[in-house]
Length: 258
Image (cartoon, rainbow, N blue to C red; front, side, top):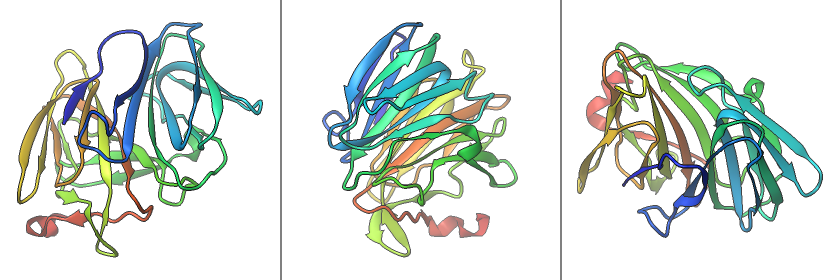
């Protein structure tokens, strides 16, 4: 399914969730506003990951911990994030005009809140030819979280990603894990930028246009992504399932491109 975050201020809690989408585990929230705006929240039975997209944001936890996230742009700086475990009361304060996203999922275990600084994020280059991209691993598999695995990807200009096509919708470890996924996109330049995403398997075949602040839910299937020439595509991605270990399955027709 495709959603578009509206250009308005405020906290869009559970903008995408199992209640209004084809997902079972993940929810997506979005916060945009001016300096001084704040919200008070409780994570409840879920673990949450907050990621600043631009601006400066403070997250204050009821135990007294204070985390500061600051970033010029997703195209300039590495990600800065805060992980929050279940049953955590906290407030989010916008210190400047800012944008942030938050993703959440039911958690079976309770870990500690933590600031994930730019230096904590591992970076890897992937692909070749015209499907090169840079991957920023925010919550890798070995991060002390119950369910969520998350990161960011930035395409090289005019390139593809998620190629060769892969999926992760069958519980058949060690060959493949069952994880649903959310992508959140930004294009640069924004005014003229767009991309395309295909989500398909033996039963379904869907194509989605991609613009800045679009969200695509991926309950299953292969899901390659492209951006038009002379433009750069960014997306935040998050995975969740009933089990933490993750393994993708490459489409057998494309194994020679791995």
